[in-house]
Length: 332
Image (cartoon, rainbow, N blue to C red):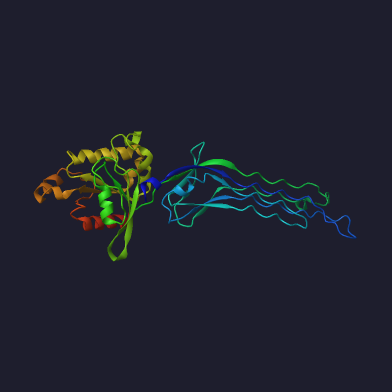
């Protein structure tokens, strides 16, 4: 996805339709001047509906469509005719989209599956016609219900990427390079911090036509959970990943300390992230020989599987894919 086209946050004005009023009509015909009530019900106002679409990866299409107004329901008519319902508005959103109330921040709905449809802003109910209010003691009710008003609200749509594997590491850890090697994604790559300013997704081909989705999350720095660097804007995308692949460069002065900093930032942002399965990849392993690699292994964290890789030299990339696949499909 193009970096300037990745939009993961929009605020929209949703206005559902008003319900149509019920009719207070009475039947009249030749020879029957005092017919009974036959007022129909008003139609329901249009809903604002969110629908999941697996072909969308961003909220860009809503950037300039921030007013979503549904139609009002039609009033009821004579002869017990119910008014037409207001036309619904369906908003297509990528999987992983959360809708929140703009004033309170409370979560309203969440879209996680293709084709999933959830009413975001319900339309007003149509009023009942006077036919509903007739009785033995009130055979000619002149009353009919008005339609219920629709809802006018500001809604925040927030996208959290759905991916099997999230890449976690400091800038220049080699995350974008790995993604470019194992998938068809074309992330921007350069030898300076924060080359990646937006998340990138790639589908990684595996054995026997299997595949999994990998997300390159912009680099974390110490203090990211408090807003330093790119801050928490992209940390949220890690929440939806099934597992986390920590990536640390082999030329790091202290790999164990760097890993501890990364874990600490995730814990401060959301402690539940530490419940996810984890792998550690030591990148740029083409810069060292086998003897130095063996020495470094003795200093690495022991609480997660570790592999030395080189995206440029294609070292242990197949082994890394095997480890990821086994972790994704391991039974709890």
